[in-house]
Image 1 (cartoon, one colour):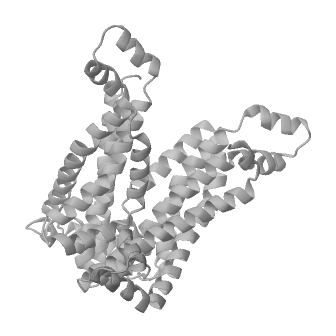
Image 2 (cartoon, rainbow over the protein chains, first blue to last red; image 1 turned 90 degrees about the vertical axis):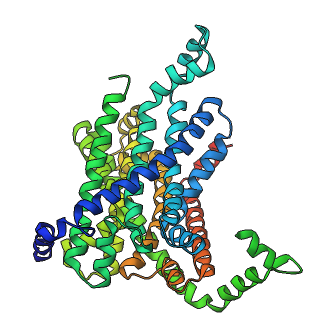
Image 3 (spheres, rainbow over the protein chains, first blue to last red; image 1 turned 180 degrees about the horizontal axis):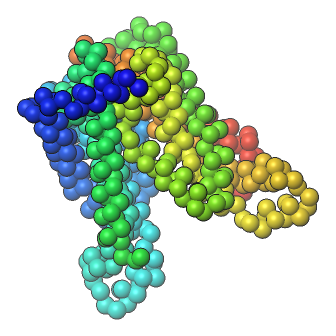
Length: 217
Length: 234
């Protein structure tokens, strides 16, 4: 357990809590990348997923694409992006967005599919337009699954952003990659523990949000 | 990219890049084959171990509501832990050497159990109560009910779980070179350090092909183990 006490003293060292290499800055970066990526991916995938779920069109294609994207190795995509697009924030962001799309898409179309057809027909029968059916019936009822998709996308991006430190992205993954370069195991362990705590906290927030926003108790 | 490879094989005038890729692939075939073998056992072992561990726990989780719910919650919590940090934490917990492939197998097994636990619980929960009662009524012992009745009926759901885990494991193994455990992912780190795109593309293709081959293998094993399914599906 001595490695863990070394990691703990690394964590509690005041010098590691300030400046650009400090935990507050690294955590802010990590959360920032995650928020940016998930926002972009949500803007692309959720409307698409809602359209697929509402109309039932292209469903087979969506299932195939989400499956294929899941098989794509993260590190391969990240390194390829850098060689194609150069160093900077853009290549990892593109890669992270691509990897965040499958859970979001799946959550959106599976959410709409989970809505009882009879409820949707009833909404149409009382004279709702298609947009009202979508906005007032289908989306609220599908909300837990849509949020579930966002939740898995967030966790996926938190994990992948860590790996993206290898191609020069900032954030908490830096402790792992920089620590490895100088064989500083306590630093790597300290960074890893912080990432795990961050992932669990974010997951907990979404669990609460899902409970609050689900229509039926 | 597959079109590039096909062009190099069939077209009369292959593009220079495509033929360079094929040349590099053929020149380094024994290196890639070595990495692919390591990749194969680093992915098959966790899936197999995960299956053996998750099935009994999943069976138990399907039977008892309270403890089962708790087990499934633990499983989904474990699954939220990012992979690279877990690869760093495990050697510290176990005192194993940092570069030991055992850490990779262990971490992937943990994820495999976390995912398959749910499909195993769903599979066993889907077995109709009446069938198990009928087996008991016709004199099956307890272990016979589980092994000869419940397990085969849960089979298709278990197989679906294995296939999902297998694809994601083959892809997840590729981060192991970051902590010094070589496999097909080494083509990414090596290609990145040398600024050599061809090597990374070939790496991605090899990983996807390996995932597909393994998936076919599970389907084949499923067909051999559950021959009755061939009759019922069309």
